[in-house]
Image (cartoon, rainbow, N blue to C red; front, side):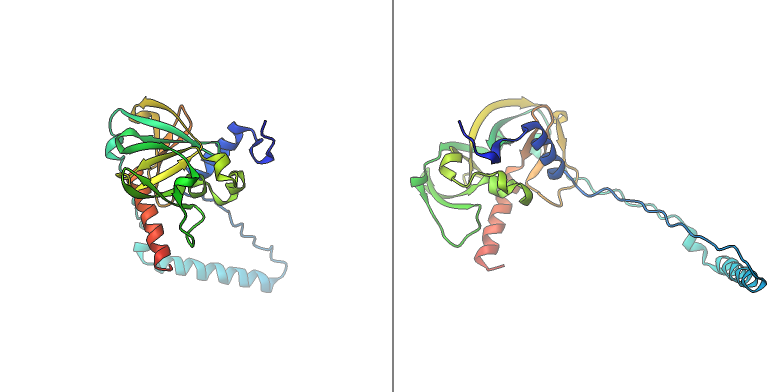
Length: 240
């Protein structure tokens, strides 16, 4: 039995908290009310000053340009379009990384392979999430530690350091351009577009297309995921 305290957590509570953070598309604006207190005039001088300020304020409001009183309608935020593969009923394969369930659409899945550390050629000097290269279908494909890439910084301590203890499969996306190392591969399910809580604004975590509501799993957008990984590697190579 594994007694590692990092994985002895209430899974539902942990995932619920994680998804609240993961799917947050902007904080809730806090409205503060400023209270203006006018002191009660105790002397004739103070009373006259208050009267003078009131008169100046009235005059200023009278000469304000009318355009300042016009209400300019706010533009509604532009919604992110639903990916083409998600516009009608589609299938996804579920897999797990450090307790988090992810879903990849079969239309964008290019294969699954067992994890063997000896098959990985390390490439020192890269990000922690970059594991190295693996030979897959006669190609050298870069492999990432998916948990290290997708987990928020404040949940990185949930990820077991020993990759051989944690990783068991590699999921290939992006026309076999990237391998996502994961803990386990689960089932294939069919879902309808309305069963997904699609993200309307992907200014952050662009790889996350939405959440499959019933299974409470993160639905990844493989083309965007691959694009982000490639951009991340390019930035490293350029020393950005």
